[in-house]
Length: 289
Image (cartoon, rainbow, N blue to C red):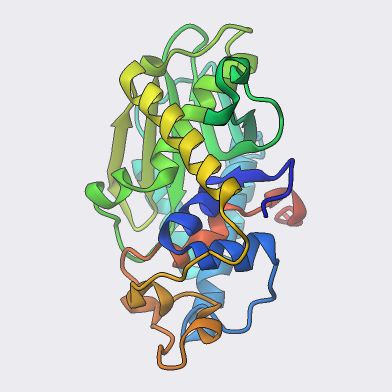
């Protein structure tokens, strides 16, 4: 049973969509991870550390830390140096500059279908949170959600389009972004989602938003949370997509014949970058300089 007050995120809902059993183990039972994410665990750990460091660098850059000081830190690591130079020479273009907030979180109450007319705005039983790498906006004008991707592979547009992050992040901004927009609601058509790839800086991916998509997302997310909330504890089935299990830390609890995959072969497997999506950068010490 999902406890009242549970805060859903794009990662937890994506886990449920990929494998309800993984959602149950990770978020409801809070099961300790019995297996490494990949067979090459040291490579995965280095991947995570570099990704965290790059996110820290950009957070501090947009928080006003001098670029020169951050660059000195980046140049001490070959991968960070490459990503930093990629960002310096091919950072996202045409971003609004009036508001630029790095590592900001917004949340909204989820209105479940069973609540009917009284559900407008939600009743607080469950919330949905989005944590943005960067929000760039102009009050009364455009708002761009920027997400940094540090994976070895460039995710395809089709793959990104069907990920819940692409739906949840704009939806939450429209619902809760007035605090950045001089108290006025942000209209869906003002919002754009931009993915920037550290390894492929000249190939960002952009998704526009609309009133129609916002309405579809509101209904879809409410139905999804309602389904999870009503699901009996004993009925969280495991996925039959074994390729996902190769990068799941719980695979040994479900299968005895699925081996861990290699980081280099992960491709478009969400589990490889999932930890970065929910990363709490406030809990990580600032980069010294």
